[in-house]
Picture 1 (spheres, rainbow, N blue to C red):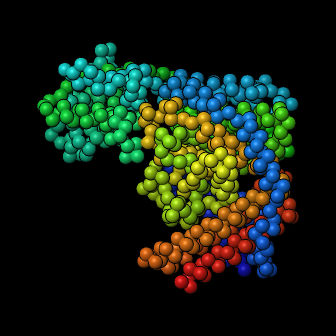
Picture 2: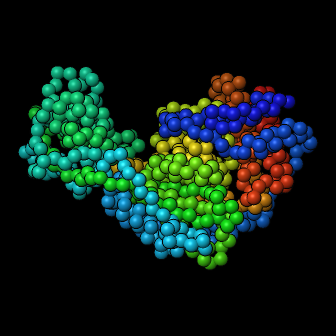
Picture 3: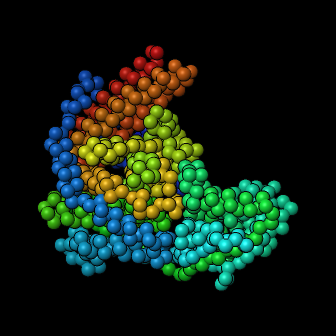
Length: 627
């Protein structure tokens, strides 16, 4: 047996005969390119556990031997209390307030939403941090930071084919039509010849005089803007580019919001088109030359970016914390007024339950609302000492869908596990993440948080007849900066949503029942982790072990089916070995659950569970090899 410890680029790496190696490289998908420390578990605790595991050779005990019945009852009680206090309708009222505003950092709608959350917190009993005394355990603050560009908000816009009486597009009914960072047109608008450039390839521009013209293309508005306005002197652009999952031929008036470069020199604009508008323009061009009129009104002004942070101070180890994050920007109701509303109601409910006698969390619970990714990243980088004690993160993004209208399902997006390398069975990427660059095995981040979050959501699902799914890691929301900083985190969201990023993402697509199901699950998750005693820690270990056994059995079946279909046996064995390795390490990370440190009983539970998972993995791998 060889025990090794070395300082890796992202943290401490521990090895045991090359079997137990914690990945400390950065998590490297397109949305996580910055890298960061992988400090998911204490290196000294890992070393100690590995030494014991390496020397353990006794018979395996029952997987249920360490089940903490009292802990399960505690979770049931938490669910009952949170369900009784949580109002999905109240959360939806916050969504209704926010979705009336077009929200980008620094603009009036964004700031109004921040101050609305502050009002909810004050009414719930949270005290402004500057006014708080030592006895005040519920506090909040609004942080402000300079922005590197002006705030932007759309006011009005229209598009008309000259000679026709009806508007082709109107901001009142298509509020995503004006591309972000578009400048206003002169009063009365602009009128010019329309030039079609197809899909916007280089050859599509050849031989076309675009100066002073309005350019129409079927490509992203930002790309079309660069080619036509910034490089060839066009007045502005009309762009059609809608993902298939938005079903543009069904929802023919949908427009996905997008952006152009903030160009002070050209002071130009971009118009995003619906399927119906694109079709009307092509039909008009088939009849001959077309002139169009565009009117655009927007406001650009200096502002500061606001973030609101609320803390429920832990009673035992307040420096350690769990952080929830919900982003305010983006104009939709589900994306992401729903996350803001659900999380604000979570904060209100927690204050109410504490007043009613709920035992205060022993670690701090923090709620964060701000700009997507950047606010969470800033929270973690502004105070490195504070960031070291952020033990878990959870992102709430698109959590209110009425799936009967939007399609899709609720999902828990997991931290990187082998399904991000080998998506198969029910573990497939969403339409949002399909085609993104996959991860490699050395980018895996074993941790118990995946299965704990999923188990608690499913417990609420069983009680409320609510469908809960899961997907491999894809990135793109506020769980990303947590993971970059080495903080274990998951994303709660929905997909596929046919109205994602479109102007159809309005209040009528938001379900109060869904908001409640997500908010209840998320808050119970936080209460479990921030106050876990030894019995709760051991219960979580049992949950993770059961998930490991289920996963290995399922992967064995998938492997058998794959081999029957012609797949290589060695490849299927490698998948089973990867999952075994991942779960052994995930169980080891449970050493940080118990408040106050790892007790001998919890240590023994970790040792036993990891050993049994290793044996289970050996059994299924042997079965696969024998076939």
